[in-house]
Length: 285
Image: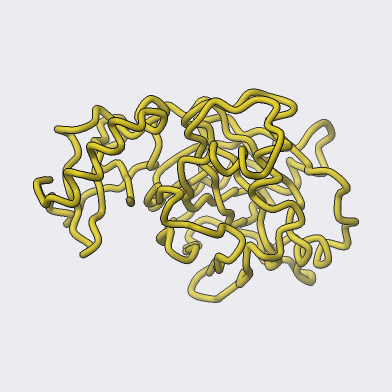
Protein backbone atom coordinates (compact mmCIF):
# COMPACT_ATOMS: atom_id res chain seq x y z
CA UNK A 1 0.00 0.00 0.00
CA UNK A 2 0.96 3.62 -0.53
CA UNK A 3 -0.17 5.56 2.53
CA UNK A 4 -0.02 9.33 2.73
CA UNK A 5 -1.42 12.39 4.50
CA UNK A 6 -3.00 15.29 2.65
CA UNK A 7 -4.21 18.75 3.63
CA UNK A 8 -2.93 21.95 5.14
CA UNK A 9 -0.16 21.97 7.74
CA UNK A 10 -1.50 20.60 11.01
CA UNK A 11 -4.78 19.49 9.47
CA UNK A 12 -3.67 16.58 7.28
CA UNK A 13 -5.96 13.58 6.86
CA UNK A 14 -5.04 10.00 6.00
CA UNK A 15 -5.23 8.82 2.41
CA UNK A 16 -4.18 5.99 0.14
CA UNK A 17 -2.91 6.03 -3.42
CA UNK A 18 -4.46 3.05 -5.16
CA UNK A 19 -2.96 0.89 -7.89
CA UNK A 20 -4.49 3.05 -10.63
CA UNK A 21 -3.07 6.28 -9.19
CA UNK A 22 -6.35 7.48 -7.70
CA UNK A 23 -6.16 9.20 -4.30
CA UNK A 24 -8.53 7.60 -1.77
CA UNK A 25 -9.82 8.91 1.55
CA UNK A 26 -8.93 6.81 4.61
CA UNK A 27 -10.73 8.98 7.16
CA UNK A 28 -13.37 6.31 7.71
CA UNK A 29 -10.74 3.70 8.55
CA UNK A 30 -7.99 5.59 10.38
CA UNK A 31 -7.62 8.76 12.39
CA UNK A 32 -4.12 9.30 10.98
CA UNK A 33 -1.06 7.54 9.60
CA UNK A 34 1.03 7.22 12.75
CA UNK A 35 2.81 4.72 14.94
CA UNK A 36 -0.44 3.47 16.48
CA UNK A 37 -1.83 2.56 13.07
CA UNK A 38 1.42 1.05 11.79
CA UNK A 39 1.60 -1.26 14.82
CA UNK A 40 -2.03 -2.38 14.40
CA UNK A 41 -2.15 -5.37 12.06
CA UNK A 42 -5.93 -5.59 12.27
CA UNK A 43 -6.40 -1.96 11.24
CA UNK A 44 -3.94 -2.31 8.37
CA UNK A 45 -5.71 -5.46 7.18
CA UNK A 46 -9.00 -3.57 7.24
CA UNK A 47 -7.50 -0.82 5.09
CA UNK A 48 -6.15 -3.40 2.62
CA UNK A 49 -9.58 -5.01 2.37
CA UNK A 50 -11.29 -1.66 1.84
CA UNK A 51 -8.77 -0.72 -0.84
CA UNK A 52 -9.27 -4.04 -2.64
CA UNK A 53 -13.06 -3.77 -2.52
CA UNK A 54 -13.08 -0.32 -4.09
CA UNK A 55 -15.16 1.14 -1.28
CA UNK A 56 -12.77 3.97 -0.37
CA UNK A 57 -14.06 7.33 -1.65
CA UNK A 58 -11.91 9.16 -4.17
CA UNK A 59 -10.32 12.51 -3.34
CA UNK A 60 -9.70 15.33 -5.78
CA UNK A 61 -5.92 15.67 -5.72
CA UNK A 62 -5.87 18.97 -7.63
CA UNK A 63 -4.25 21.64 -5.48
CA UNK A 64 -4.15 19.33 -2.46
CA UNK A 65 -0.98 19.60 -0.38
CA UNK A 66 0.80 16.35 0.50
CA UNK A 67 2.16 16.34 4.04
CA UNK A 68 4.72 14.05 5.67
CA UNK A 69 3.41 10.48 5.40
CA UNK A 70 3.83 9.80 9.13
CA UNK A 71 2.36 11.88 11.97
CA UNK A 72 3.70 12.26 15.51
CA UNK A 73 7.16 10.89 14.73
CA UNK A 74 8.95 10.06 17.96
CA UNK A 75 12.50 10.40 16.64
CA UNK A 76 14.45 10.65 13.41
CA UNK A 77 17.64 8.59 13.57
CA UNK A 78 20.19 9.26 10.82
CA UNK A 79 23.10 7.21 9.52
CA UNK A 80 26.10 9.19 8.30
CA UNK A 81 28.59 8.24 5.60
CA UNK A 82 26.75 5.05 4.64
CA UNK A 83 27.53 4.78 0.91
CA UNK A 84 30.85 3.58 -0.50
CA UNK A 85 30.70 6.11 -3.35
CA UNK A 86 29.91 8.99 -0.99
CA UNK A 87 32.87 8.06 1.22
CA UNK A 88 35.12 8.02 -1.84
CA UNK A 89 33.97 11.42 -3.11
CA UNK A 90 34.57 13.10 0.26
CA UNK A 91 37.89 11.33 0.86
CA UNK A 92 36.58 9.74 4.05
CA UNK A 93 37.49 6.31 5.37
CA UNK A 94 34.40 4.07 5.41
CA UNK A 95 33.30 3.65 9.03
CA UNK A 96 33.75 0.32 10.79
CA UNK A 97 30.40 0.80 12.53
CA UNK A 98 27.40 2.94 11.55
CA UNK A 99 27.67 6.63 12.40
CA UNK A 100 24.51 7.70 14.22
CA UNK A 101 23.15 11.20 14.69
CA UNK A 102 19.67 12.56 15.33
CA UNK A 103 17.30 15.01 13.74
CA UNK A 104 14.46 16.53 15.73
CA UNK A 105 11.01 15.45 14.50
CA UNK A 106 10.09 19.11 14.02
CA UNK A 107 12.52 19.28 11.07
CA UNK A 108 10.09 17.07 9.13
CA UNK A 109 7.95 18.79 6.49
CA UNK A 110 6.01 17.65 3.46
CA UNK A 111 7.73 16.47 0.28
CA UNK A 112 6.89 19.62 -1.68
CA UNK A 113 7.06 22.15 1.14
CA UNK A 114 9.48 25.08 1.08
CA UNK A 115 12.99 24.46 2.44
CA UNK A 116 14.48 27.42 4.30
CA UNK A 117 18.14 28.38 3.91
CA UNK A 118 19.25 29.22 7.48
CA UNK A 119 20.37 32.71 8.36
CA UNK A 120 24.13 32.93 8.00
CA UNK A 121 24.30 29.80 5.85
CA UNK A 122 26.99 29.52 3.21
CA UNK A 123 27.03 25.74 2.73
CA UNK A 124 23.47 24.37 2.60
CA UNK A 125 23.69 20.96 0.92
CA UNK A 126 21.35 18.33 -0.50
CA UNK A 127 21.14 14.61 0.39
CA UNK A 128 18.54 12.20 -0.99
CA UNK A 129 18.03 9.24 1.36
CA UNK A 130 16.00 6.09 1.75
CA UNK A 131 14.00 6.43 4.98
CA UNK A 132 12.85 3.43 7.00
CA UNK A 133 9.66 3.72 9.05
CA UNK A 134 9.42 1.46 12.08
CA UNK A 135 6.24 -0.56 12.71
CA UNK A 136 7.14 -2.65 15.77
CA UNK A 137 8.87 -1.84 19.03
CA UNK A 138 12.46 -2.96 18.52
CA UNK A 139 15.17 -3.37 21.15
CA UNK A 140 18.31 -5.51 21.08
CA UNK A 141 17.38 -7.24 17.83
CA UNK A 142 19.43 -10.37 17.14
CA UNK A 143 19.17 -10.83 13.39
CA UNK A 144 18.52 -9.22 10.03
CA UNK A 145 15.23 -11.13 9.87
CA UNK A 146 14.05 -9.55 13.13
CA UNK A 147 15.17 -6.15 11.88
CA UNK A 148 13.25 -6.32 8.63
CA UNK A 149 10.19 -7.64 10.48
CA UNK A 150 10.20 -4.41 12.50
CA UNK A 151 9.96 -2.25 9.36
CA UNK A 152 6.51 -0.90 8.49
CA UNK A 153 7.62 0.61 5.21
CA UNK A 154 9.84 2.99 3.32
CA UNK A 155 9.73 6.56 2.07
CA UNK A 156 11.92 9.30 0.59
CA UNK A 157 13.83 11.68 2.86
CA UNK A 158 15.79 14.81 2.00
CA UNK A 159 18.46 15.12 4.67
CA UNK A 160 19.20 18.81 4.08
CA UNK A 161 22.48 19.79 5.76
CA UNK A 162 24.40 22.99 6.47
CA UNK A 163 28.02 21.88 6.18
CA UNK A 164 29.65 24.90 7.83
CA UNK A 165 27.37 24.54 10.84
CA UNK A 166 27.90 20.77 10.82
CA UNK A 167 31.69 20.60 10.46
CA UNK A 168 33.27 24.00 11.07
CA UNK A 169 31.43 25.31 14.12
CA UNK A 170 32.58 22.79 16.72
CA UNK A 171 30.63 20.19 18.67
CA UNK A 172 28.41 17.60 17.07
CA UNK A 173 26.80 17.38 13.63
CA UNK A 174 23.41 18.35 15.06
CA UNK A 175 23.97 22.08 14.46
CA UNK A 176 24.02 21.51 10.71
CA UNK A 177 21.21 18.99 10.64
CA UNK A 178 18.37 20.42 12.73
CA UNK A 179 17.58 23.69 11.01
CA UNK A 180 13.94 24.42 10.30
CA UNK A 181 12.46 22.39 7.35
CA UNK A 182 15.63 20.28 7.01
CA UNK A 183 13.87 16.91 6.60
CA UNK A 184 11.24 16.81 3.84
CA UNK A 185 9.60 13.38 3.96
CA UNK A 186 7.32 11.55 1.54
CA UNK A 187 5.23 11.61 -0.55
CA UNK A 188 4.14 8.11 0.44
CA UNK A 189 4.85 5.49 3.03
CA UNK A 190 5.15 2.36 0.90
CA UNK A 191 4.49 -0.70 3.04
CA UNK A 192 7.35 -3.17 3.36
CA UNK A 193 5.57 -5.91 1.40
CA UNK A 194 5.91 -3.75 -1.73
CA UNK A 195 9.69 -3.38 -1.26
CA UNK A 196 10.97 -6.96 -1.15
CA UNK A 197 14.63 -5.89 -1.35
CA UNK A 198 15.51 -2.39 -0.11
CA UNK A 199 19.07 -2.81 -1.46
CA UNK A 200 18.04 -2.58 -5.13
CA UNK A 201 16.54 0.91 -5.27
CA UNK A 202 17.68 3.68 -7.58
CA UNK A 203 18.21 7.00 -5.77
CA UNK A 204 18.33 10.31 -7.69
CA UNK A 205 18.39 14.07 -7.04
CA UNK A 206 18.36 17.12 -9.33
CA UNK A 207 19.18 20.77 -8.59
CA UNK A 208 17.61 23.26 -10.99
CA UNK A 209 17.03 20.40 -13.42
CA UNK A 210 20.63 19.14 -13.35
CA UNK A 211 21.13 15.57 -12.17
CA UNK A 212 23.45 15.64 -9.14
CA UNK A 213 22.95 12.27 -7.45
CA UNK A 214 22.30 9.05 -9.35
CA UNK A 215 22.99 6.12 -7.07
CA UNK A 216 21.64 2.86 -5.75
CA UNK A 217 21.03 1.49 -2.28
CA UNK A 218 23.25 -1.45 -3.31
CA UNK A 219 26.15 0.93 -2.50
CA UNK A 220 25.19 1.14 1.19
CA UNK A 221 28.04 0.20 3.51
CA UNK A 222 25.55 -0.98 6.12
CA UNK A 223 22.34 -2.28 4.51
CA UNK A 224 18.89 -1.55 5.90
CA UNK A 225 18.60 -4.72 7.98
CA UNK A 226 21.99 -4.15 9.61
CA UNK A 227 21.17 -0.49 10.29
CA UNK A 228 17.91 -1.32 12.06
CA UNK A 229 19.50 -4.16 14.04
CA UNK A 230 22.49 -2.00 15.00
CA UNK A 231 20.46 1.02 16.08
CA UNK A 232 18.29 -1.21 18.29
CA UNK A 233 21.37 -2.03 20.37
CA UNK A 234 21.66 1.61 21.47
CA UNK A 235 18.08 2.87 21.66
CA UNK A 236 14.57 1.47 21.57
CA UNK A 237 12.82 2.00 18.27
CA UNK A 238 9.07 2.58 18.43
CA UNK A 239 6.34 2.43 15.78
CA UNK A 240 6.44 5.63 13.77
CA UNK A 241 10.14 6.29 14.33
CA UNK A 242 12.10 7.08 11.17
CA UNK A 243 15.65 6.11 10.18
CA UNK A 244 17.38 8.04 7.37
CA UNK A 245 19.87 5.55 5.94
CA UNK A 246 22.47 7.81 4.29
CA UNK A 247 23.10 9.38 0.89
CA UNK A 248 25.00 8.34 -2.25
CA UNK A 249 27.68 10.33 -4.03
CA UNK A 250 26.94 13.66 -5.66
CA UNK A 251 26.44 16.08 -2.77
CA UNK A 252 27.77 19.63 -3.08
CA UNK A 253 30.42 19.02 -0.40
CA UNK A 254 32.03 16.33 -2.59
CA UNK A 255 32.31 18.48 -5.72
CA UNK A 256 35.20 20.67 -6.91
CA UNK A 257 35.53 24.31 -5.88
CA UNK A 258 33.57 26.43 -6.09
CA UNK A 259 31.16 23.97 -4.54
CA UNK A 260 27.58 24.58 -5.73
CA UNK A 261 25.84 24.93 -2.38
CA UNK A 262 22.15 25.76 -2.34
CA UNK A 263 20.77 29.29 -2.33
CA UNK A 264 17.31 30.84 -2.17
CA UNK A 265 15.55 30.34 -5.48
CA UNK A 266 17.08 26.94 -6.18
CA UNK A 267 14.73 24.03 -6.86
CA UNK A 268 15.60 20.52 -5.67
CA UNK A 269 13.82 17.42 -6.96
CA UNK A 270 14.48 13.89 -5.70
CA UNK A 271 13.11 10.40 -6.10
CA UNK A 272 13.61 6.76 -5.18
CA UNK A 273 12.36 3.90 -7.33
CA UNK A 274 8.79 3.03 -6.37
CA UNK A 275 8.67 5.48 -3.46
CA UNK A 276 7.70 8.67 -5.26
CA UNK A 277 9.17 12.08 -5.92
CA UNK A 278 9.74 15.32 -4.00
CA UNK A 279 10.15 18.92 -5.16
CA UNK A 280 11.22 21.86 -3.00
CA UNK A 281 11.92 25.49 -3.73
CA UNK A 282 14.43 27.10 -1.38
CA UNK A 283 13.82 30.44 0.30
CA UNK A 284 15.72 32.44 2.90
CA UNK A 285 14.71 31.86 6.52
